[in-house]
Length: 251
Image 1 (tube, helix red, strand yellow):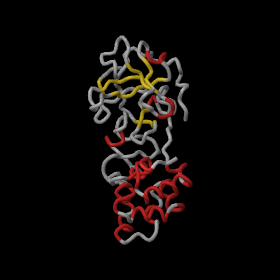
Image 2 (cartoon, one colour):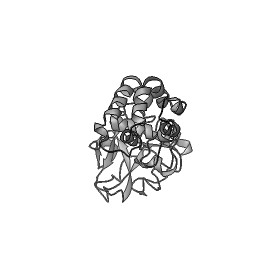
Image 3 (cartoon, rainbow, N blue to C red):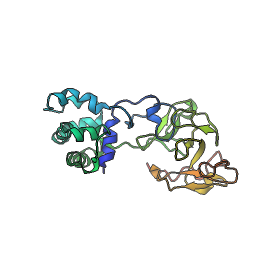
Image 4 (cartoon, rainbow, N blue to C red):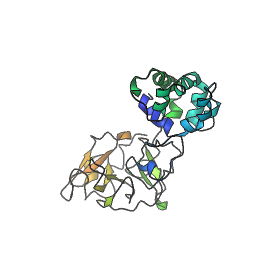
């Protein structure tokens, strides 16, 4: 299902993201090389920019959003009435831009969500393109690393991704972790350490494979261990080649 908040995030993210905003999830260097739309938590996306003329004129059709993405093309074709009703309502339109209030209970956004779930889910829901444990799906020789994007899926981030295990990193500003790892930070978004993605404890040396963070596609991250300087963030003796072979990854 396309959730109300998830739909808003996808729609806001239809504009091409670049720089740090595409990396505000968990890692990677700058913008993703993925064709999957990456949600942005700041600024206005393609929905607001592409429909500015229809919004100011009352919005009589959905032609303004056609050609922006497969998701918006589907909404224009199958959910135009619901989209226009939302776009021409102040709060619902703000919700599409990630700025509204009480969006979960907004009736017009709910109607758009129901239509999108019924007819446009395949086009509007981002999908992971790579296995973060093994980096399969990314171009490793070119320095690409599979990591979690702010859209909530795993995508290939371009180089540089060159920080070793337990090296200092930052999801917002870099430096970024090597393939097979992500930057685990504290609850204030600080003190980042590179730690391995994992499927089982065997992937984490003396540490543990933590599944409690509910990363997508059945993936966990390594924490703790005898060599961990910050046990709640990273395991520092994970094997370079994960014994699980990334088998827990579910596309």
